[in-house]
Length: 283
Length: 214
Image (cartoon, rainbow over all chains, first blue to last red; front, side, top):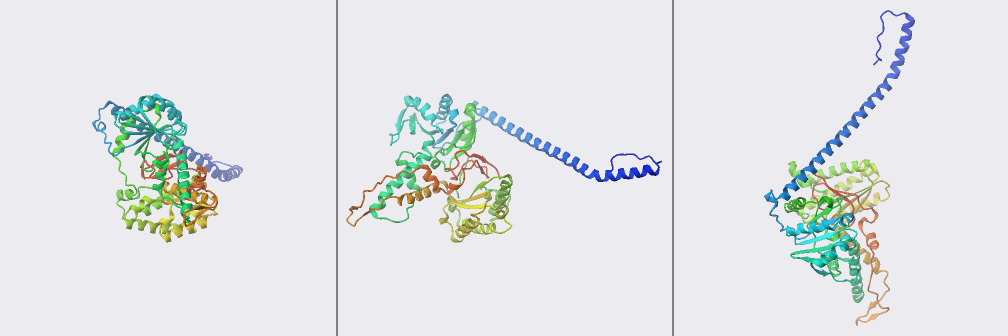
């Protein structure tokens, strides 16, 4: 493609030679120039498409959040009858995982417990990684409820889990020490028990444990407990933050967002959605 | 990897082809991951709970696994393209011998590869992994205890036995299948379900989980 130039019809020979050279130069330089212009335009178009895609995704996400919020508000008002009579046959234990920073807001935690009590949840397991709930909530609950402390209570009261009975609801409070540390202690318990047993019988067979033995060991040392069917996560990230792995096998995990923005309708919806779930358990 | 049967049902696919389709999708995803620079990918291929399925489906899955594992060692496969190191995690003794041998061969032939790491969980559950780790730790600790024995009359010979063993979390984690890989940062479940189903429960306290519809 030649650069736009109109050549007058009446030219002398010298002028035509010059024009030939100019044309040749133009022919040599044009392809790289064209390529440069094409690639720049292509980059601009691709960049525009990328930002457009981001914008579309952000709008869809915002619309989805607004929809969820609106639905939660409507559920809270009690206008939707299907959310009023929740089927709790499959929900024996509900777990709440809270980010430790947000767990310091004990007012919100107590409000959440009241909501769950009104929905007739029978067993609640509260968890935060750093044990903030054990320190902050446990003392308040002690005065309101009858407290039972699990065996092996030679540990500091702030680090062991505690169970509280509130009317028909049992509240259990856990922290990171009930997770990996609990499994470590169960391992020590099992190994100690069977090492002694091996020497007494001169048994030299290859030592292997069964999962049921680990479960029994956890219960024996006070780290047993029900496996929650549903786990609600309050915090900035959708992760379980070290909730005891042995109790998390088939638990439905729902991220509820920040504790600050929690609302009753969202809790009811999470429980309602859970009641409609079906699990094959591997089959 | 989840949802193969539901995917095939929605698309009226031929029975028996659902898991092959799942494998194809897996290879595509792995390609994307490695091109993006992801260093460690772990996939949940077969749970111990899946042995509860119909015997013909389990057998079909085992046969498919054997065929696809053998394909991985071919020159044009993704393993050679990215120099993958492959691990198989799980209770491999529960598998049929041909499958287990194929897995051991694959692990042995890729052990020195310097590229990304692909860990495939087969006959795996997190609770079984923890249980086996406790057993391995127990075996290691048993060797450290001074030799002593009981004679036929039941009398203790030799030194008195210290029957109290203390196992640290570090000891235990060294015996896990996942010992040589870092904890994952993201967990994706392809069917849209929002539970872990006994997958890496111990190793992913901070992993962001994301349900994705296939």
